[in-house]
Length: 103
Ligand SMILES: [Zn+2]
Image 1 (cartoon, protein in one colour):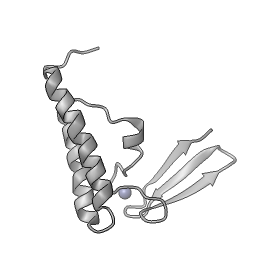
Image 2 (tube, helix red, strand yellow):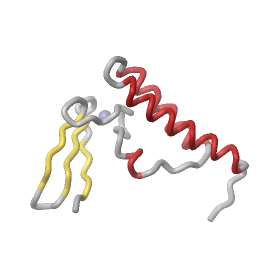
Image 3 (cartoon, helix red, strand yellow):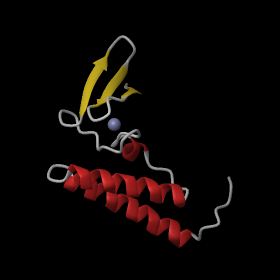
Image 4 (cartoon, helix red, strand yellow):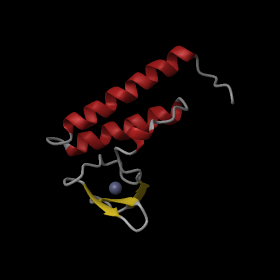
């Protein structure tokens, strides 16, 4: 593993900030979708700067193409594909399609 130049406490704070930004994005989603998108954008930027990988749950929360929070029925369409055992998630904002395996 490559050693980071950033001290550990900074990474820790950055991680906390990402978590806060995601919860804010969730909170503002209904009333202020634009603000919500901005929070996701910021969280991604912090992650890049501090070399922090977003958790799987965090990554699945938003569209990587347009930073929209993916909410089934609101901003995303979710379809199960039984033949390939995948979940097809379509971002209704930019129409990007994500496929995720399910058990
Ligand atoms: Zn999108």
